[in-house]
Length: 335
Image (tube, rainbow, N blue to C red; front, top):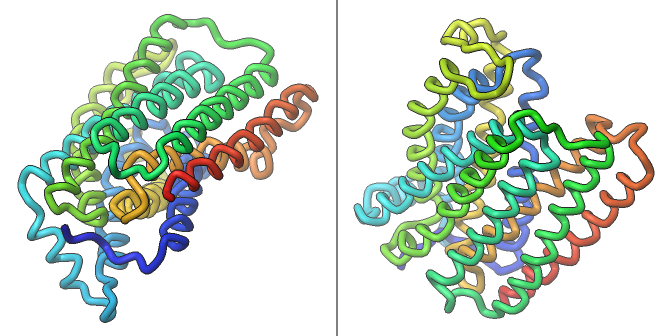
């Protein structure tokens, strides 16, 4: 099986940590886009992740023990088996739909409820499916699942911090928001395990990331314009392409940067997932440390917890501790 070239386990682990920071940082670019509606921002994000996965895949996939050549990456794309491409496209479609619905759920119920339901369910179910579909790839599954539990507890601590900060969880359309969060979690959970089958059919992580991004673009080409015309968030007015066109050039550039950041993380994650001593389950679970990174942005850059009760900061400290210990256990699962 042909895989991307990574010279050592330590470098692969460093790439997994970079993945975590990429996945926790791309949403921050929306903060630079004024009052631009999220759906319009997402249109730029959707196409830019395709361009980003191609560029990052080209840079990384061209590396080999003998040097760098663009032909290495182009061969990965052209030689991919049809069934492997279909698996990667499917992964992109379910991830693309799930990621967009997560944003909708957050707007319906608030971050404190939607995030732990959506991401917590996606993490628990996604890691389990990734492990069950290829158990032999994980050297020490006990460490993986101990780390998984700790990461889930960290997500819960993060939710408690937000709940304490706001003093209550928004109740408008609560049932609808919870339902959307559950659907989001199930969809996102379905994206890692298909790569077990794609890798078995010779797909590389670099090529897999591009085909996954194309799958996400396909579903978002239908889902985002529909939601723009038929929003389900209370008091949110329908919008059209005028909303997209009114953006400043810098807003489009920030959205594209968000796509490039996400693309870097996804290429790195899939390359690591396909390395010896790693697995799809390990790489996926490590990537969910993005919640901790997003919290860092909120605490230290956006000052979201300035003036929050002392208990909120205690929950945040607990979150960081649980995440760090959880990541150590997951790293030990590599053997």
